[in-house]
Amino acid sequence: MNIGRWIALGALTIAGASALAQTPLPITNGSFENDDPIFGGLLGYNVLPGSDVSTDYHRTGDRCVMLGPGDLNNFIGITTDTVNIYVTGRPYYDPSIDWYGGNIRATMYYLIPANAAVDGGGGGIRLDIKLFNQNYGSLDGRWDIQGNTAGQWVKYEVVWNKADIKQKVWVNATENCEGGCFVNNGPPPYGVPPYPSRVKVTPGRWNGTSGGGAGSNIIYIDDLSVVQDPSCPADLNGDDMVDDADFSLFVVPYDNLVDFRADLNGDGLTDDADFSIFVVAYNDLLCPH
Ligand SMILES: [Ca+2]
Ligand SMILES: [Ca+2]
Image (cartoon, rainbow, N blue to C red):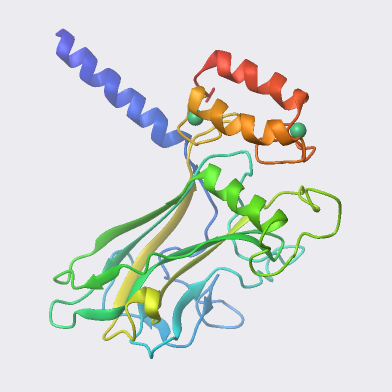
């Protein structure tokens, strides 16, 4: 075997390990094949008016979900915040996340027929992180799915960086209380932790100004999935290494001592105990997987 072949195999091994290290989150019925056996309707999702299951197209299985068309300022979509009666405690179908884990990555495929292009009311995926059913931060959709795909399935992906998630929760907890001051049940940092532990996933289309206005025609979607990228707690920017970029993110909350954005031991504060954990990871550089 020549050296080039060895190098190629080595690269494949590394890529494979990285892919395996992602944590697939337990999204239910991502191919949209199943109805709820008792109540009917799409298993695992709230189906908002204007959306429905379709057998006109499918990327896998026999079915997909159709979004639209919609009226101006209507939101059309499906969302995972519906009660799972089949599990003790009746949690929502929202997939679980690890607050100390990596970036959240949601993927789906979409299809728009060549003769029915979408103009306005673009599609996308909105993500909300939650503790139980309380929303602690939102990544609004880009609503940029437009035009047509010539009848082909096209991959669409949204990545929510872990540092941005923590920043969003911090702002919501302490500053402008976006969506209401929901974490005001204690001294700073206002009841956080416990930290958000779930992500509500909402593929849809927004027929408002940010989505380009009232949308024409239909966006078909299939094969929704969510994963959490490889990371370790001290890797604050989610690139799988603990280096100077993470230190820059660490020192801001470390300096004020009432801030959970770089809390590594779960007590809600970023202090010397967290610094001790950080320096060990910084010295190791690479996240252990
Ligand atoms: Ca990093
Ligand atoms: Ca701490």
